[in-house]
Amino acid sequence: MDGLKVSELAGRSGVPASTVRFYEQEGLLPARRSPAGYRLYDDVAVDRLAFIGTAKSLGLPLPEIRRLLEPWQHGQCSDVQRELLPLVEQRIAETRERVRELTAFADRLARAHAQLEAIERAGPCDPSCAFLGRAETVVGPALRSLPLADRPGDDVIACDLAPGDREDRAQHWRDVLAAATHRVAIPGGVQLTFDGERLRLAALAELAASEAQCCRFFDLTLHLGSPVRLDARAPEHALVLVHELFGEPTA
Image 1 (tube, rainbow, N blue to C red):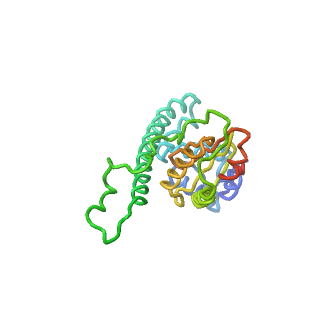
Image 2: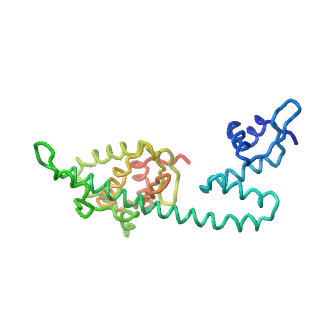
Image 3: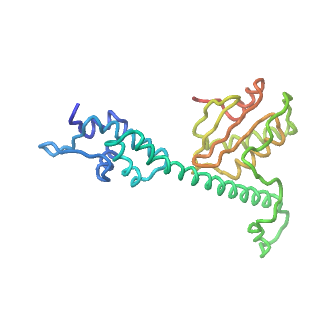
């Protein structure tokens, strides 16, 4: 069908009408005008919006997407591939660098948190309170790697926490996991995705590291990026404990 109005194109593509208008203004989505002044789009616009959405999901800015649309519409698939590959490689490098930066930042926050908990003194603050800036001072476990413990090597399901401490630990998890937005099933467990604005990243990193040390049958991996994700796994016969602590997958 030729001559889709903005509302019709939005309904077909699932893209909001305001976004359709914005893409036209940015030169990404050509339209013609009806005698009455309405924007009209052809069927290709649906595929064009899908391509734009895919490119955006890869983190490409609008100028790069605009450049890709020319070979996408008039060239061969190999032309798009040739243009897109270096852009994706650049995004991979940028993402890995961001992961390194976030890992270092999470380490610093976790050290600061441990140092704050270790303070036992009364009286006003003095210049020594600047200890948080000492990068070389480490109190408590430093979270150096994304895998928070070695993978479980046996089937022993045991926890080093005293019974009285387990409920406190569970409550800490409930507080931190309140920022989880999605839970999906993965082999051996569940992956949680977090809302970056609500998540207390340092608390999550420290709590996961502590859990991995006292309950070694858990296999926990923290993925620092956008969004932050946590993989929680356990041996098959302990999967119920994963779901009990981290929640059951919703997808």
